[in-house]
Every structure is written in C-alpha cells, then in structure tokens.
Amino acid sequence: MELRLTTAERDQLTWMANNLKDPKLQRRATALLEADAGSSPSWLAARYGVARATIYNWIRHYRAFGPGEAGLRDRPRPGRPRRARPGGGDQPDGGTPPPTRTGGLS
Image (cartoon, rainbow, N blue to C red; front, side, top):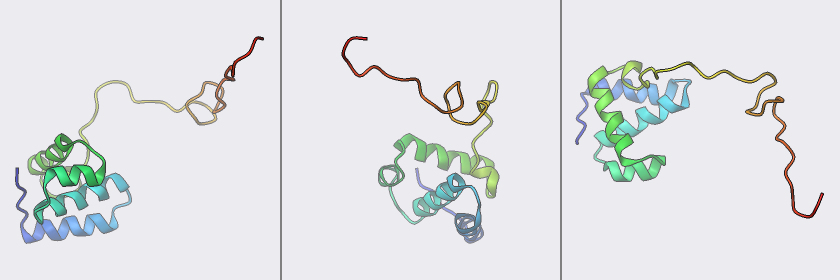
C-alpha cells in the first residue's frame, strides 16, 4: 500500500511532526512522511517498534480522515475511560507494590 502525498499534505505533516505537543501524533506524522518517501511498511514497523499492520492502519486512517490532526488521532475507544488511582500509580494504595516473598519459610 503506497502513500502519495500532495505538496500541501507533505508540508502540513512536516509542520505537525515538528510542532505538535503529542509525541504519538508526531511519530505518526513522521512515519507517514517516510512512507511517502518510499520507506517500506516492514522497515517503518521495525523503526517505530509496531506491527506492520499498524503502519497500514495509520496509512488507511490518514486516507480516510484526511490531512490535519484528525488523520493522525486514534478513533475513540468503546467503554468506560480509565481512571487514575488516588496518589498515582497502578497500585491500590497509591503506588507501592505489595511485598513479595523471596523464599524461605515464614
């Protein structure tokens, strides 16, 4: 699947790759620019540490939702949004993991 960008799209993606605050969107914009320059999806997948199917999904999504941030953003996920625990971290007590047994008898 090839990606052929117009000059305007290329200019916009270049701006987004350099100026957006969200690093995930910057990475996708850069990957799309590299795809347009002829980089293979396999090479891009290895470079960005994602599955090759993810690269194809990024290209397909950009084509469907067009230039601009809408073409780079994830679609909304179904279900209830995740909530942070009080005090931060993923542990119920605010970030301290439970003690682990290191062997021996207790």
